[in-house]
Structures are given as structure tokens and as C-alpha cells.
Length: 254
Image 1 (tube, rainbow, N blue to C red):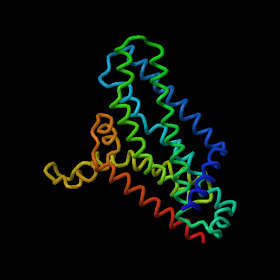
Image 2 (cartoon, rainbow, N blue to C red):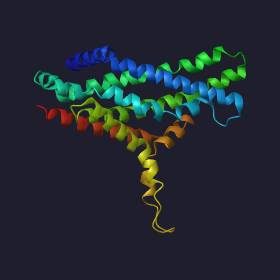
Image 3 (cartoon, one colour):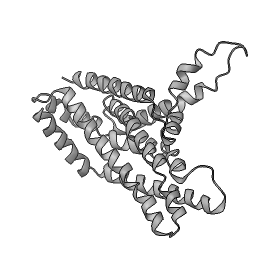
Image 4 (cartoon, helix red, strand yellow):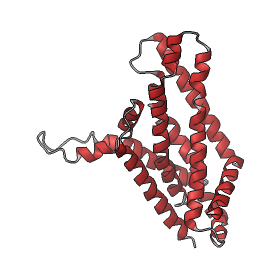
């Protein structure tokens, strides 16, 4: 166990020393800051049915598509290219410990980035003295529900990114694979719902499992304060699957 925490601390330091981490962090906060400003500006122009927090988290997929590949593309691809992975695996570090340590480091950084977005409503509140505006900006059910969704779904997204990184020696290839995989997970299931049935009275048995995979519907439930166990099962089981596949891919380098 102590060996795992040493590897985790090493991966955490490497993450903070990597320029890609700072590029991802700056782009992430800059993009989400602009999106939050645009949402608040929309409230000054037209009445809105949803709160700023709900609209803000509905755009989660925009930063996910570029931040997750940036954070995970170096995970194993760079070490495979330089031969560092083989040297690391010849020590007492086991493949599963290395995979979990890299996953824990990027997941912690990912959560830190999203936690920084809590500054957006705080900054916005400083510009208004209306109590109603404060209640609107601090919509706690939507805010904490959205953050819970981000934390749970991030497990699957980052484990997918690390798996893609373990498949190639090229960071660019691993980033492209990660982007494609994220698109299939987030938007692919939505596209499946658009497939027409053969006949209008055809059974809809296929529609039920596909709706179970709808990431956007999970977000709407979480932001509305509806915490169901089925999304947890989906994201956690997917995370375990991708971490297992990553461990197998890394172990093959022995």
C-alpha cells in the first residue's frame, strides 16, 4: 500500500510539472468562464426557464472533449515512446498500482479544475446587491447536483482516456482515440435513439437499454436533485472495465 502512495505522489508531481496540465487548466477555466458570462448575459436579455447553474453544467461536454485528452494523452503513450514504461515495470511497481496511481492523479486534477468553477457564481454575486440575484446565482441543488454528476462521470471519461493512452506510443494518436471514445460515450447513445424502427408498431425493447446510457439525461436528473443508483452503476462499472483493460495493456509490456 505504501508503494502505491509513493507512485501516486510521483504521478501527482509529474502532472504538476507537465506543461500540458497548465495548458489544459488555463483553457478549461477560460472557456468555462466565458460560457458562464454568456449565460448570465442571456439572463439580462430574456427570461430563462433554467437557472445559470443548470445551463452551465449542460455544457459540460465542451471542456470534457479537450481537457480529458490533454490530461490523459501523456499517461502511458509518452512513457512507451521513451521506454520509461518498461523500466518502471521491471521494478517492484505492479501494473495495477501504476494504472491506479496515474488515474488517481489525473482524477484529482480534474476535480480541482471543476472545483475552481465555484468561483464563477461567487464573482458574479459580488456584482449584485439584490437578494433575489444571490438566490438565483447560488442555486444549491443544481450546483451541487451538477458537481456530483461531473465527479461521477469523470471517473468513466478519464479511465477511457488512460485506456486510449495505453494503446499507442503517440500522444497525438492517443488524444484522437480519447476524443473519439468520449464522443461515442456522450453523443453516440443519443444518436442511437434517432434510429427509426422498422415498423411503427415494432417493439421498443432496444430503446430501454439505450436510454439507460443517456449521459445528458443523467445530468438533468442530477441537476434536478434526483440521485438514482443506475447512473452510478453505469459510470462505476465502465470505470472498472476501462481500468482493467488498461492494466492488461500495460502488463503486456512486461
